[in-house]
Image (cartoon, rainbow, N blue to C red; front, side, top):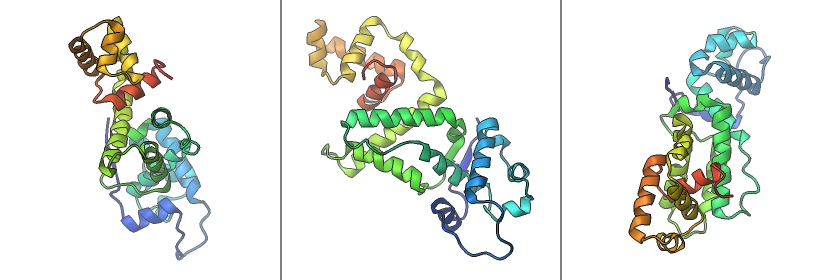
Length: 244
């Protein structure tokens, strides 16, 4: 899978495009809106991936010359920034604050997963600097709000949401959910109980096992499913319908 880099264009032009800042420019009044340009670019990327998206191809799709297109967006680098941010507008972030933190994170993870299914080209974009657009910022703020009030430091909160974002992207790339078939019936039991918040001691008592045996099973589960911590395990369990 080829990789393209966002955040590599002109910073000021990128910020203007992301936040809809209109600056005066010479020449005739534009015949298209910025939204039309981004929508057409997204449709091309959805069909053909980023490899099929070029400024000339986009200009042809819009029925304008390539030179005219550069009046709307300076280069493909800035275009990718706006496309990526606009895609995250599809994730509804309102109404999550009333949910428990696990449910809120799970909902955001599921919506993130659905977004990557709709726009798989997002996985081809690597950021060379943070993308400070309104929609990606709103998504990040919603993730932080879900873990706010848990007594975590700002750094720990950022690490948790970054971990979950990375997990969703990694899962989409690898199709790791199929690894559930590799779990034994006992490991599936333990996976469910741990996802429900049970400690190793609780699981051991419920299943009449030693704590050491539970710890060994948990280690095997994490390795088979390629998970790095309990937050990833919970999100995985929700996505598989193991817990609600």
